[in-house]
Length: 355
Image: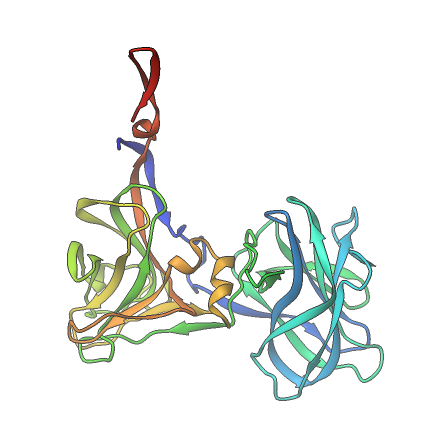
C-alpha cells in the first residue's frame, strides 16, 4: 500500500454544507386544499426497480387518503401528471394524529429506472375529503438537484431537499444523491454525568486512508469543553481536546471542525469509532438523525457501516442501527493503488504476476 496526499482533507462521511441551524425539517410543503400536490424531483443513481416510497409528514391538521405517485418530469422541471408506467402509484391513509410520521407506501406496480433517469415522487391531496397537512422536506440545503416543488394554483419550486426513501425489490434501499431519508432529527445531550457519556459513530472506510481531523454538527456552549476521540476498539488512536469558548456560534447548532495533533492510517473494512467525549459535567448537544429502518441507512453516504455508538463510564460499546450522529473524520491521504498494480517477471517459460 502507498498513500498519496490530496489537496485539502475530505470528510468521511462527507462534511455537510448546512447553515448554522444544522439539519431541520421544513414546513413549506403545505397541502390544504383539493388536489394540491407536493413533489420531489430526483434522479436514479443506479439501474433499479422500486416497489415502495418512504416519506414523512410534519403537522397534520386533517388527515386524508393521499395518492403517492411516481411520474415523469416535463421540460419545465415539474411533474407532468403522467405516471412513470402503469400503476406506479399507491394509496396512503394519513390520520389526523399522524404528525411527524414516517410512511412506507407500496406501489401498485413497480417502477423500473435506468441510471440517470429523472422522475418525480408526487404526493396528491384528493379532490374531495382532502387533508390539511405538511409533507416533510429538509432545510437546508438548497440543491439545484434534487429539489422540491409545490402545486397550489400552479407548480412552483420550493427550498429544501427531498425527505424520501426508495425501496428496491428485494428490500434494499436506493441511494438518492442529495436526498434526506431520515424520519427524525435529534439533539443528543451528553456530559460527564450523563448516560451515555461518550457518543459518536462506529464506521468503516472502504479503502486505506490517513485521518488528520474531524467534523461534527454541534451546539457548543461556553465552558462545555470536550474531546473528539478516534478509537480502534477501546484504544484511543487520536484525541483533539476542544475549548468550547473557541468554537463558533455557541448559541446555534453549527459545523465544527478540527485537526488532530497526529495522524492515523485506517485499514479498509475495519471498525473504528469517532466519538464526542465531554470533559465537563455541563451538557453539550451533538446532532443526530434517525431512519425508520436500518436498511434505509443505505440511502446515506457510507450506508449501514456508519451508525451510532455509545458507552458509559468507559464500559462496553453499544450501537443503534437506525441512528447516526452527525460526526465524521477528515482524510488527507488515500491509497494510490500502486500496491495493486501487477509487475511481471519471467519464470522459465511462464509469465507470473507479482503483487
